[in-house]
Image (cartoon, rainbow, N blue to C red; front, side, top):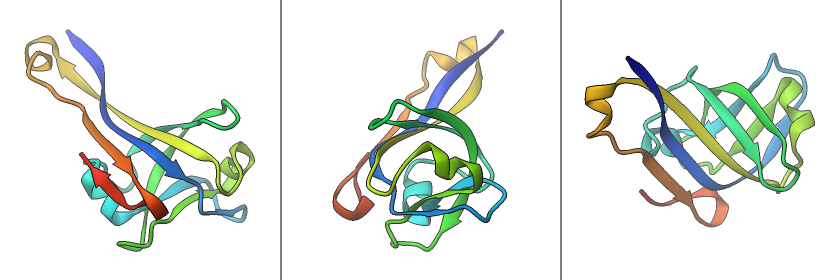
Length: 117
């Protein structure tokens, strides 16, 4: 049997920019993507702490070390610059392998820089 687990969790992320003229996604600094074990194109769930919005989209890579968290396309309607986000990715695991699985947790610090795993 397959079970769905939270694979990666990024907390304390803040929206730095919004760009309406795009087909939709969330841009994340490459350093954060790597620390969270995410990939470009991977589906994520985005939770806006400020307004309670939750939406599903996919990751695109922003410049390494830029600290950028950018809402693109229709997602711009889900938050404002400065809003705090939690970004989650999930995976499917067999019951056997799930017992040894550990979620990757990333907490961001000032300017969306990785502060810890």
